[in-house]
Amino acid sequence: MSDSLFPIADAPTAPLAAPYRVLARKYRPMRFEDLVGQEPMVRTLANSFAAGRIHQAYILTGVRGVGKTTTARILARAFNYSLPGKVDHPSIDMPELGVHCQAIMESRHVDVIEMDAASHTGIDDVREIIENARYRPVSARTKVYIIDEVHMLSKQAFNGLLKTLEEPPEHVKFLFATTEIEKVPITVRSRCIRFDLRRIESGPMIAHLRNICAAEGVAAEPEALALIARVAEGSVRDALSLLDQGIAHGGHAGVTAQAVRDMLGLSGRGEVIALFERVMKGEIAEALDLARALHQAGADPADILIELAEFCHFVTRAKIAPVATEDPAVSEIERERGREFADLRDTRHARRADGYAQSRRHFRQDLRHSLEAKKDDHCRQPPGSDRRRKRQAPRSGADRARGDRRGRAERHCLHRRDRQDQWARRARRRRP
Ligand SMILES: Nc1ncnc2c1ncn2[C@@H]1O[C@H](COP(=O)(O)OP(=O)(O)O)[C@@H](O)[C@H]1O
Ligand SMILES: [Mg+2]
Image 1 (cartoon, rainbow, N blue to C red):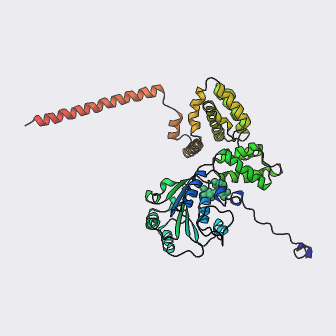
Image 2 (image 1 turned 180 degrees about the vertical axis):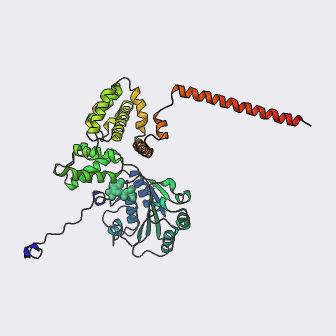
Image 3 (image 1 turned 120 degrees about the vertical axis):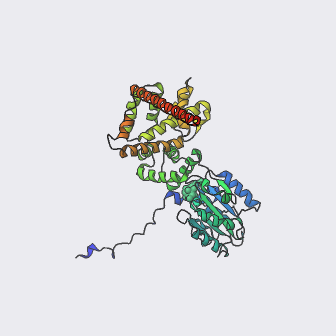
């Protein structure tokens, strides 16, 4: 066997590439100033730190990817902020990394204990926390328990936590994060300061994506970023995952609107608007042709409906509050055509259709559920089975009349039987 098969010894050693970190992790904010779109919470926290009124337990709630875990880590950092010789007290102003900051942000600090309640639901896990809470922190100033997805704790576990949560040792703070606040018992909620983290508006979201593209040296079309911001529905994590995917999809060309649309299976805004126009004019045949063409080009029928509903809602907003057209997530063609439709005298139909569009976040979910349920139901019923036949063939007028006649006859019979019973009872009573 020749040595050339094993060239490792002689070959110049290439430096090992660092493993890729996804954008969402790479750009996790380290300070409150870097958090996008959560200014009210940051202001409240800044005031309470300035006044020395730092609570012992906080609960953070909001949809996925808006910064709950991130906020919890930044708070843990603020409780323990310390710069030798300069700062030795809790502070929300953290211009440089303190002694414990890096370890806390990387979730590996011995005194900042992160627990995932989704996998530690029981009373035993809580008992461990209560036991350990009695001991002072090893190196930091404050021991912080971050319990993510806290709504997953069992009832017993919540009850076990109550006493410690009400009167924790001085060196302990609790930070809870949850997407489903209503599942957290009121007894727990009442012992915490609550912050509702908001969905991020499209303007700040697009600006955040643009900054990240600039930092990564990736070219991105503004329309592509607007599309990503729209699909992410206010979740920064969703937006960054889509951007990651978009960068991989676009390759050297950067992130283009067409690539994002292809990647997400979205139809072009122009085509959706054309479809909307046909529907509103009542040109059903043309509308069906267009919908079919979109479907054949790869668009998901549910997404077509959702985009139609969104444009419909946009037209209504443009009619009632014209500032809506200045939203940066709206493309130029949408803005122009939206204004055109809004200027038409009668948008009654559009407004009626808008009933769906207003709840478009739920609409997407509802539509998917109902389509899936229909599919399941259809698969479960063997062809020609009774239930299916019944649903396929609605009752004819004659059937209904026959049913009504039968109903009337039955009612009559019952009535007669009741009367007969009554007579019999009376007769029995009269008999000596
Ligand atoms: N408000 C925000 N500002 C900037 N980036 C954010 C924000 N919220 C989330 N992110 C990004 O999304 C990622 C996940 O955020 P995380 O705090 O874990 O979300 P969750 O609310 O689901 O706990 C972060 O690493 C960060 O990159
Ligand atoms: Mg989280």
